[in-house]
Image 1 (cartoon, rainbow, N blue to C red):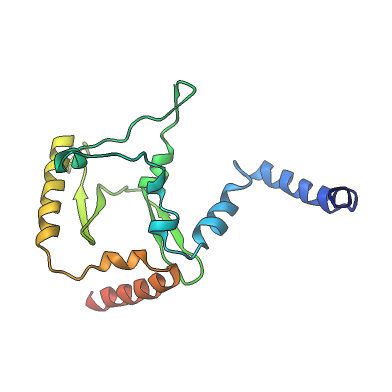
Image 2 (image 1 turned 180 degrees about the vertical axis):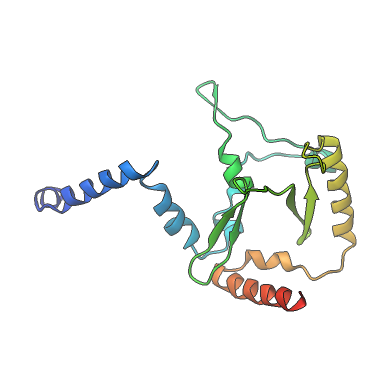
Amino acid sequence: MVDEFRTSGVGERLQKGLERRAKKTENWLSDWWLQTAYLEYRLPVVVHSSPGVVLPKQDFLDRQGQLSQTLPVEYLGGKPLCMNQYYQILSSCRIPGPKRDSVVNYSQAKKPPTHITVVHNFQFFELDVYHSDGTPLTADQIFIQLEKIWGTSLQSNKEPIGILTTNHRNSWAKAYNNLIKGVVLLL
């Protein structure tokens, strides 16, 4: 079968197509992987394809340890790996769609956001990470805001909208579109 594939011309045509694509892109596979294996994957993201699973498991002794933890530098062969991947992971938002999701990345925006989104107790919060002059907040200042979010989310009796993100992607896309329509009507 392999010989037939090679000698029939199909293998050669496919190989040449991949070589042409490789000349035009940094990685011939990454866009296909993103679109097909990631954005068209319809099972719930939280369990099946969350970027959080690449982070090391950590055990925390208390809430302060959990809120003040930093990402460790990763090493391979004793040398630190490039941490630029975190700009993609931590600056992106996956928007549910009916057949394929989309990704919005804010790290390259003309005016990048000065906040991050924190989810706790199925509630979403905006947490400022920069001062108005553009300088980053200190770890202690961010910790104080995380403490406030923690307390607010425990006292909140709002609908746990965040739980919708754990649905099958098609169901979440329908709910998302309905929520967006409601927000637009309120504006």
